Length: 498
Ligand code: AHR
Image 1 (cartoon, protein in one colour):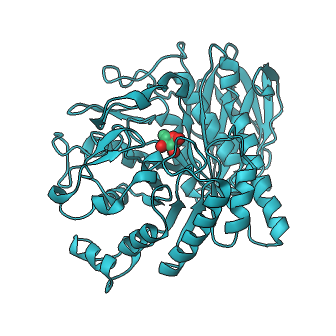
Image 2: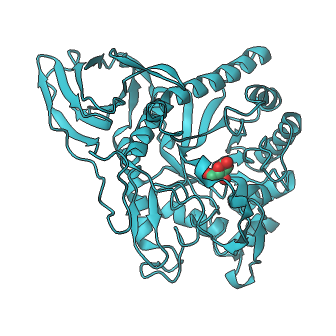
């Protein structure tokens, strides 16, 4: 099979906002406790954070980290997580039926995130709480001093303001599972008034309003329109959440997940611009895809029946090679929409549906999905180019006819490097790709990597942490203005040239 595309620096879509490569740390299962934080671990630093996990996070360097939830935030009392640890209350976390020790709170998390090279994307509780708690947290975090909350921060050891710029107005507020769920009208009013008050505390912040929890929600579309009509002038982004999984043995549909992500993004963009038209505004609302990943949700139902426990093992998904290919293709979809998707968070960072796994008192390792995420984040900086791929298609029961190859390219103006990202969804056949690069004379092939395996179900485990790792592509050539590359069957690929 053959496919082709053209790379021309004139066909620019948009600059990539580095925040597209964010991730998510929720107080859920073992993401925080025995994930990033484990004071008795052999590698723990003075603050109790694991050094081995930190090393893997630093390698990813997610520019933003959403925190502290997720569903958790809708019942969270942020004041429980400040001050002397021995005085912090142990609480019931109703979202995940877990005991919350509050050993990690806003101060420790923000300091740790900055050490990782990340900015927090802080969520406020609009489930059980509201304007007052949100403004107090913002004052605690960002006000320089001389007021009750800012002076309390200083007394708690952080003299300079945390300077947190990005804030989420709640989480999945349309979801029946959410503590303090709201109707669209209720949430729209609360989000607007909270945004207004928060902007008075600190006008420099950026705000994300909750979109639908997922695109199959019965109110999808009308929820976004109702919320944006009320909040349009007060917020900057609307959120999207989506998780993908293989259903039964329909791998062909699973591999087409990015086609669904494309459609989801384009629907939300249409709704944002519809409201823009109705309100006759020039400002555009952009998208914060602040939860996305592969998650076998169907395998994890019934966890709500779990007994109360401290940091139980929740949704510790082991990712296969094929899951990594899908994660790589979802990143291609996000890049393709870089004109409107400015923020995205791979949910989550450690242990809970995460690219990094760790064992209490034991090792930390990279899952298969770590690689496309790390490599796209490292090489996908600059401006995204429209590449107009042409090639074979195949039929899926879920998304209809989809291209066998999905691809995009990013031009880094600083280094002059162009990087192509491409997925071959064919499970059995390699794909010969020819790339027209006549507009880029004298180029040379640089770094290239591919993820493929004889066993698409292969995973990385504590015992075999390097079972699946990227390899160099066997066959990449450049002649007479054409790069040719053979994409192995069922593979994610990255080729850089300059
Ligand atoms: O990431 C796991 C959960 O999925 C989050 O807490 C919630 O927001 C979403 O439903």
